[in-house]
Image (tube, rainbow, N blue to C red; front, side):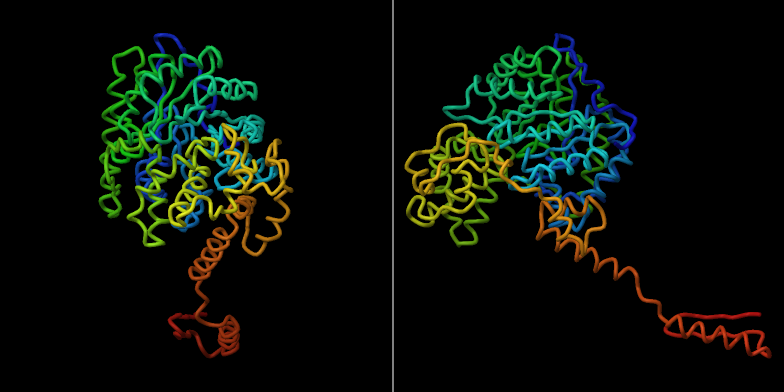
Length: 508
């Protein structure tokens, strides 16, 4: 693992008593711009403030994972592995954190165990200290391999409870999932509220219920989005009940569908038993610099709204609404969004109330769009939805609607084992298929997760390298002949010429 000045496990000896200092994980370089900028913040925009953020003293900085990897190769023409290496160099004193979707890693389907294991090992080797792993269904079997491998690498592994609201997602559900994660050896627990549905009183009750399950020494961290307007209040209640750390973003990339503002939470907690100890003036200085960076680049975050309480009704995260609109726009049916939002909870109930987070948000959302556009429910069921209904994404929180399962089962039974157990090893095929372009183990892993997108990226990278290595303007054979001729022409003391812009001067 890359040598750094901090231990991934240090400063997690946070007391759960009344004098607990609260840690702050800053999401500016990952989830914040994923939420507000469609994941378009470039490495070049991060570097001017990276060293200053390194000195602030965050508990950690989330800088990698989620959609950033895909966006780097698909839209930005950047190598995500190089981004991680550069940020590691610029922030040697800060724990770097990443988000993985359990067995899905950073993609939208399950990957074989050998790919998962190699990816986690290379992530830690290139600078990741803390691995936050989640599964969209809270199926701990889908998190097992990332947890085991992360622990073997010496990383801090944070298990995650995906929070949602449904008839089956009660406190007992979360306690059961947490109990299984603790048994797997996680180092801390995160409550992930991706849609901003966690009410302050519910946050307090949940943390209080989880504390005896995870024990007094295992830290609990809060992650929430601000779209409903409740995230900061939920953090406050959770902290008072024993939460040890919260996720925030520097103010230019905070609020709306992002996290609460770092500066606000630092001031709220200052001079309380939960004081973060962070310097508000240093944070304001960084915020001003980030504002200038986006203003100069002309890609400042655009918020359609700071608060959208409609999310409390349809429970659709902000990013998911954008995807739904894109699908409807393709069919010139954007005016039917409200119909889709009404249909979506019905589909979710039929599907067993999955939390709406990648990849289940895409599966449920696409099915709702099709149901509305076709004028008949489940007239078309995409392959991903069929796989989900057959258990190939994991165990749904609640049984699938019988009428729907019968429609796709065709005499089959849903699988009851861990879905990845059915997958053949993926490393050797990926190694062979990526051979024309891959120059490192990291390249092969990029290909294994995103074959088509990675191929396009590798080809573009090769073209760029060829463009940078311009051919020598004169054939070396001609230069050799001129030098030999000059050496033989003893009467000449000096010779000069210019060919295709190349100036050649020979002197005895």
